[in-house]
Image (cartoon, rainbow, N blue to C red; front, top):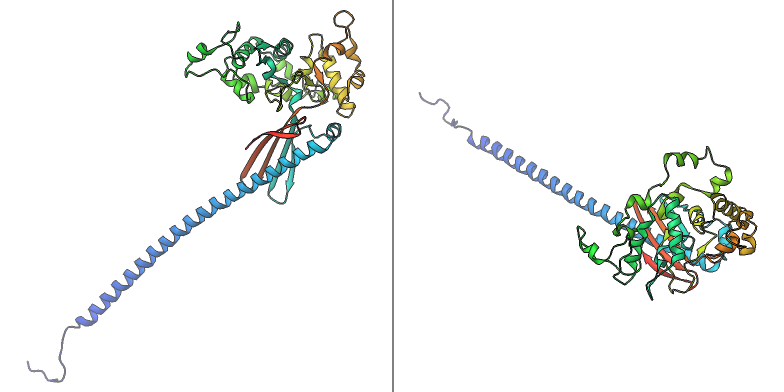
Length: 363
C-alpha cells in the first residue's frame, strides 16, 4: 500500500522506552545508595553513641572516685584534729553516714574503731612464736557465746606462726599441700578478715552469718528487749566478723592488742573475762551511752555498778579487765562509697591515730 503521507515515517518508539528504563535504574541505584548510606550512618551513630556512653560512664566513675578520695581525706582530717571524745559525742562511729550532694551524687562514709574488736593477728608474737593466751581465752569465750567451735583458732595460730609445729586442732604446710587445690601456708599476719576463709574450719557462714538460733532471735528482738538492751545490742553483733579484726598500727608495741572499751561491741565485752555476765556487759554499753558514748578512764567506768562484783580473792571484775582494756582508739578503718548515676567508687583507708597518718589505702 502506498503511503499517502510521505512526510511521516512510522517507526517503533524504542528511544522513549529505553529512556524510561534507564531512568528507573538510576532511581533504583540512587535509592539503594541512600539506604546503604542511611544504614552506614546509623551504624556509625550507634557506635558513636555507644562510645559516648562508655566515656560518660567512665567519666562518672572517675568523678565518683575523686569524690571518694576527697571524703577519705576529709575523714582523716577529722580524726587528726578533733578530740576523740568529741567524735564519740557527735556519733561519728555510730554507723554509716549517708549524704546527698547535688541531684545525683550519693555519699556514704563509715568510720569504725578497729581497736574495739579482738585482733586475731595478736594471737602470736611473731618475734618468738609465743601464743598470747589472754587473747586466745577471749577468742574462745567469743566463740562460745556465738556458738562456734573454739578449736578452729588452733589453725589460725599455725597460719600466723613461723614454725612447723602443729597445734592440736591446727594445720601446717603438709596439711595445706594435701588440700584440693593445694595451697601454701602463710606463716605471717593476716591482711584481711576474709583471709580466714583460706584456713580450715572457716567459711562464709562461720564469719558472716547471724549466729543466733530461732529462739535467740526471738529473745533478742524489739518485742522482748528493753530500750536499753536495744541500744546495746544490734543484729550485726551476732556475726563473728563484726567482733574481730586484723588491722594493726604502723608500729607494733606491747599492749596494742588491748580492747577499746569505748567502741567494743557486746560480745567482745562479754569475752573480756570469764566472770563477765551478760547483764554486766549490757550495763557497760548502756553506761557508755548515758555517758555521752565515751568513758574517759577507769574513774568513769567505775560508775558501772555491775563491774564491782568479786571474781577471785579480793579482785573485782573491774580490776580484772583493767589490764585488757584501753580508753582510746589506735586504728580506724574509713570506708567511703560515692555513687554518680549508675557508677559507684569505693575507697578504704586505715588511719593510725598514734602515728597520725594513713597507713593503708585501697580502691
